[in-house]
Image 1 (cartoon, rainbow, N blue to C red):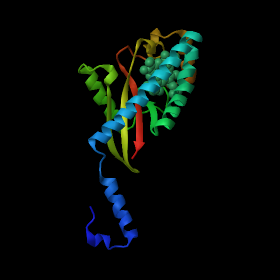
Image 2 (image 1 turned 90 degrees about the horizontal axis):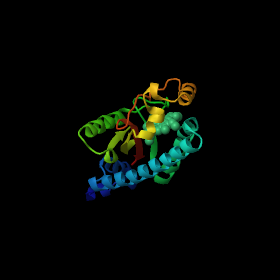
Image 3 (image 1 turned 30 degrees about the vertical axis):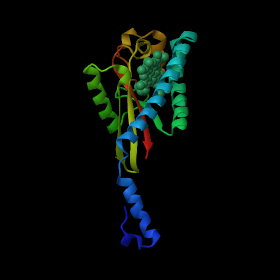
Image 4 (image 1 turned 45 degrees about the vertical axis):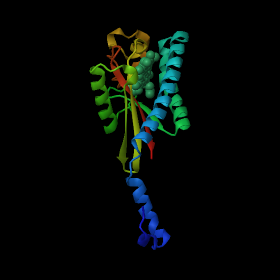
Length: 198
Ligand code: HEC
């Protein structure tokens, strides 16, 4: 794209120009769709692994034991998937249990859009969205997948009055500021959020 007179500049002068051109161009729609497919695969694997461990722990040790799976294993499983995929991965919710699981502006918007699509009749399995956004450090690919409440989830996220005493007691100790109760199957519990600097 450079014209000959520009090429006459010393090469160090071209470098900032090249960086500028590189940074201002968005990845093509195809490239973004390919990144979304990657993210979808990673999300699917992660949800399956976590769901499997959760069910196993619920059966083997009971609900209180399974809380430890959510607390300790969820971040470990996410970290392993992050390392494999090169994406930053977290779970967030506006009614968060983990005090750090607060959505940022993009995640809040994504969640609102996913809520609308769910209300319009879209299937929970396909509820995801993605975008390339500007960040202070340059562009980043962002992906959000809705985590829809299933029957197994209400063991620990259902209406407070329906929770087993053992669960209630453990949650009160581990998460004194818990906002993640009161859900019924079909509600979006939060999003699985992924981010990759471009
Ligand atoms: C055994 C209890 C238990 C079950 C069952 C359970 N969760 Fe959780 N969930 C937790 C705990 C504990 C945390 C907080 C984990 C942490 O400290 O990061 C949590 C956190 C989350 C978060 C992260 C946001 C936040 O509020 O901190 C999401 C999203 C979530 N759960 C969704 C689900 C979904 C969807 C299901 C069903 C497939 C489910 N959970 C089943 C106990 C449970």
